[in-house]
Amino acid sequence: QSYGPEARGGKSKAEVVISDHPIDYPKARRLDLLLAMNQAACDAYYRDLNPDGLLVVDSSLVEQYPTNRVIAIPFTRIAKEELGKEMVANMVALGAVGLLSGQVISNSLEKALLARVSPGTEELNRAALHRGMDEAAKINLDALPRTILHDEEV
Image (cartoon, rainbow, N blue to C red; front, side, top):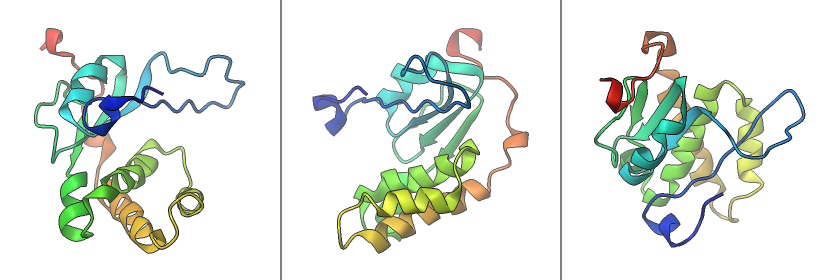
């Protein structure tokens, strides 16, 4: 994790490593999926993507996509305008990324979320999670280009 003052508005980073085998090194060397919730994070971390990696961005806050293999979803707009709380944009994103990754069972993700949110916010967070899943369900991953192009290759 990379959390400091930048986590309150700049770029920050957290990595999740999933494997069927023992994980000997807890940091991701190359990313299969990168979620960028703002332009600074997108610009700083997109080069860590595998050639066939997937960049998912909050299109409410990320305007320049440095790759042709991108999924742009307005997480912040959805949270603010549809759910009434901008602060659940990350839960909308979690729902989308959970579904897009193909690595998490929806019910398990919801149970984990509900076990960790503040009391009284369960329904809002559940709605945000499912709203993100709904957005991801609309996406045809097979229609995306097969490999990413970094800006020096374009």
